[in-house]
Length: 336
Image (cartoon, rainbow, N blue to C red; front, side, top):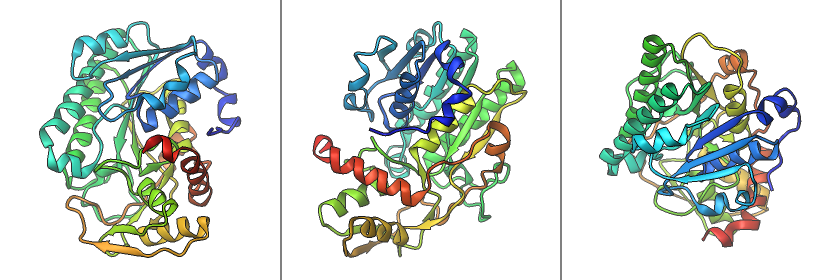
C-alpha cells in the first residue's frame, strides 16, 4: 500500500472530514490515488464518476466497503450525468480524460469529445451547482514547441498533438468562466506522473510502467528516439498533494494554472539505467524511431505552485522508482 506523508494532512484534516468530494475518472491512475487519500483521512463523502474506458474496477475495489464511498458509472459527455454527479458536492477534482499523444493522433475526434465536450459539461455542472472549488488535470503538453526550459506557466508554444490542443482548450474555457461568470478554477499542468496503480498494459501505456514491466521480466526497454529525450518525472504522491492543496485553498480571485512536477530533468536513458540499477540488472535498450507529436525536452518551474498552494514535491525520482517497483512486484500478475 502507498503511504502518504502525514504532514500533508495536518492542515486539511478538518476540512476533509466535513466535506464531500467528486473525483471524475476516479477509477483511473491519478483519480484512484486521490480517492484513497480522501477516504484514508475521513472525507464525509467521496464520489467517483467513471465510464471505465481507461479506468479499472480493480483500482477502486478496496473502497467499496467504505460507507463514505459512492460510485456513479457514467460518461462526462452526458451533461445529465454530470449534473447528477455534482449534486451536494463541495469539491470536484476533474481527472477524467483520454490521455496519450499517440491515442489522440490515431483518434482525434474521440479525444476531442471526451477532453473538451466532457470538460465543458463538468465545468458547467459544477458552476451551476455552486461547487466550492473545481480543480482539473491540465497537461505539460500545452507548452508545445516552446523551446524554453524550465517551463513557466505564461510562456507556451504551438501544440504538437490533438491531445495538447484539447488540454489547452480546457484552460481557455476555465479562463473564460473565471472572467465571465466569476467561477474561478485551478488547472494542474502535470509533468509525466507515475507510480502505483498505473497500468503498464495496452498500446498507450506510459514509459515508466512499460520500463518497469520489461525489467521485471528481464527484457530490454524499447525507447523512441536516441534516449536523450528528457522529462520531469513526477511521483503520484506529489500529484495527490497538489490536488488536495488546490481543492482546499481558501480563496482565489481568478483562474490559475500551475506546474506540478519535481523541477528535475531525466533522460530516458538515465531512467532505464536507474530502473536496472534498482533491480541490480544489466539489460539493453532497443532504439526505435521517435514518435510524432512528442516534445523533446520537458522541465518545470514549480515556483508558482509553491507560492499559490504551498506545493513542495515530497518524493523525487530515485525514491519514487523504488516505491513503484515494489508495487509492481506485488501486483504485476493481477494487472496482466
